[in-house]
Image 1: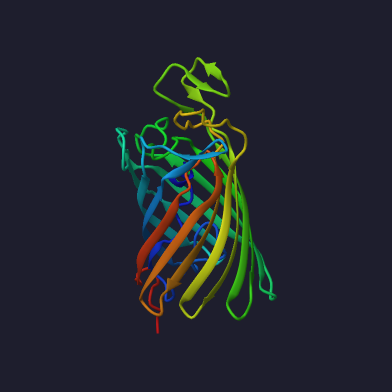
Image 2: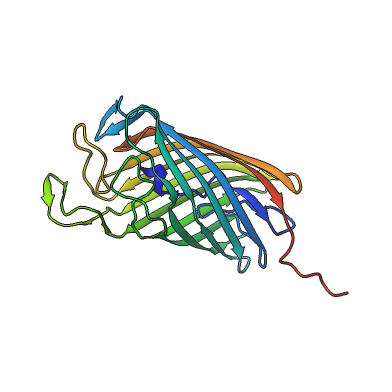
Length: 305
């Protein structure tokens, strides 16, 4: 499901190395300054009871409530004031409240992002480009959805971010992405998808798009925003009636939520809550992230007198 494989960078706990905390992520217009770095850790929890089997919204008493938990360490480094590098590696576990399906747990995919500020002018308008890749690290099973913690697909993402920030601190941000996903191999000689049988262990995982809009406030150590985002596979099939999901499925989800952060000085906290409003072949999940923030200084050298 979407919550297993996408953008665990939200709601992060920041341990930063600059004189100010910059809660920058691969989908926003906030940057770590040059020669500063930020180590991040976040705890996230996502659960659903109802899901969309194709367009049919239903529940499955053999699963009950499905729950996913993750812990995400992340490092963000300011190469220059306009170029940031971000890397992260989540640990994920899944479980259900009913039935006999065993959950999975373990390290998932190593992700890396380059974010570059293309344009910025005095009116508060800026344009940014992001390139991201991910490589599976953990030895998890991809074709055991919804218990799988990922799809074992290598990915490459291209993203454009547009932002307007008013001098009052109010901002509007929008982004659009295209995600290329590699084929994967599964531990079986044949599988069924697209209403046919494939006599191979190689599975074509559909590419995807991602888009979002955010409206918020960021000033004096306070950040608060509301957002809507959409994840859509480019092609793919549907979950067959009373069957399990499969990596070839066309997974689509529209989320809405809130993100807030308060950090007046060295110590702060942040929260994030979101819910899937509509979807296709995904669970209607309610998710939240929580974290504490603590500032460190160790990269900058003291200036010579």
